[in-house]
Image (cartoon, rainbow, N blue to C red; front, side, top):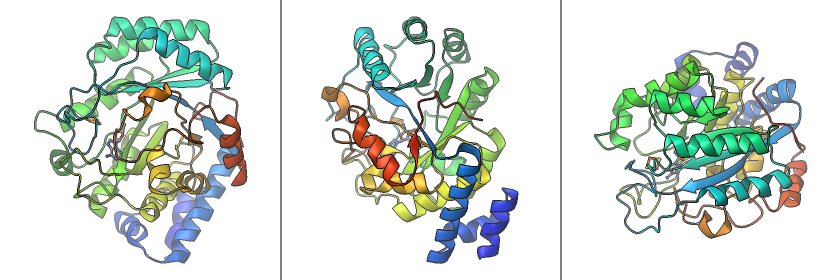
Length: 344
Ligand code: 5AD
Ligand code: FES
């Protein structure tokens, strides 16, 4: 099976059946070889750099009802919050001083954040911090909305496709949500010139190896600048409360495969990965990841932005502890970059 890894390393592509054997392997040697090749590939293009993104969780109100997500609208047992303009700007100010050069504004689909509100906010941030990138992660919006926010200065947009299988999509989302609409949003974002991030969860209920292969093929089709994947982690107030988390081993293996298929992509070591294992993100960095997104949200709201249980968000992983963060990144042999960190 090591020949398959070598082929993937050399050519960046393998067949579905070869992918299946790598995804399903329980051979430690194969997994280790994936890690080694992924790290070489990452270093070839990005050296030892790790890019930081300051994550600002602007709202946990959400009109959607995804079955896996802790802030779905049916969850009546969560305290809702939204940040106002001043609070968001003060997160940016704090983040800028801490050295962040990308701000990611992420939130549930909250109609409070109208196009006018967002455009004003985005242009204000760009005016104050012209050397920073603004990334949005606000779910599905109209073409016109994406267009206006781009015009106001937004640089990037994160929208995970969640799954490339229509059948699985239907099992994870309420009927009113549309698989085609999600895909259309991604195509619209790309057409408008955003740097686009997409991705999916590993080990989400009902996911098969074939589904993961479909996800990888879909990513090959849309060629995103950023690919965010992390393990599914159950949330107690959702229909999937009794389901198992995705595993560290499988998530890492997929991260490695992604790096080999997408040598130039920006791939974050996600908070969910750090949640299922204390050294999850460090292991992610060693397996091809080159981005970390520490939390810049006000400490008072961090626990409320609970997509899943036991989210890490108050200790070393948060933005305040830049020194701890740098130490952790250095401890696995990488260095924090002070650049904006655009894709190559
Ligand atoms: N476990 C892991 N990731 C989750 N997300 C939502 N709910 C969960 C969960 N229970 C991910 C989705 C979404 C992103 C913001 O968080 O993939 O796109
Ligand atoms: Fe869809 Fe939260 S309700 S990701």
